[in-house]
Image 1 (cartoon, helix red, strand yellow):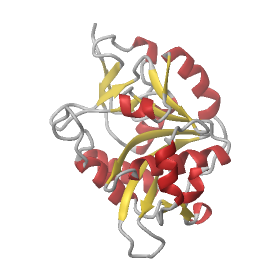
Image 2 (cartoon, one colour):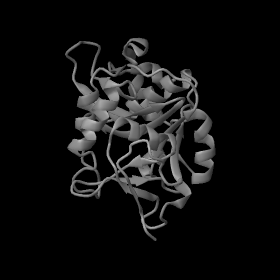
Image 3 (tube, rainbow, N blue to C red):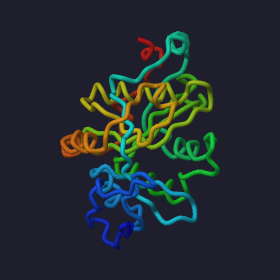
Length: 246
């Protein structure tokens, strides 16, 4: 089966996700660019870019799709006990570029190199500058010079958040970032975080698989919901992670 090649118009429609290949699972199209209009067009239609250095840009919509309910992130009792005594704090959109760079450097079991290429980093930095891409950061304490110990970033469209990657520089840093992001989104009426592709770590944190058709049906009203782009920094504030312990 021939894979659709995107043309130069960033507003051109993507092929429907249900036309994606079964092997490799979810490949919808190749080519195009990483401009903000193209990326927003992709996410609104349940499609995301994922490719390695030296490859053309590859666009995916896997079946099934891994998602978190924003009220369903699962933290172990042991980790919750650690959070209750932790000096860590969460902030949003104060270190976006740093979070993306650290996600790119984070070792991944069974993976050589990174799909977060310099071109991808630049593209998401542009999306962040436009108020569409966001990060939640975990710092070792409330001080301005406290080190960054974990983070997560992704794209917000309407009432849907599309998670891209997360990292830990201290044990539990990424889990705390995910939990802080989920709590923030849930309070704002955003019910889901897209986690893209299944892996055991995500499942251990409460992620579940949805058939692609169900994911797409859930997605459409959420991405069409009115939502202003812009930084989350002031509204999010500085939040002690001990509040996540429940």
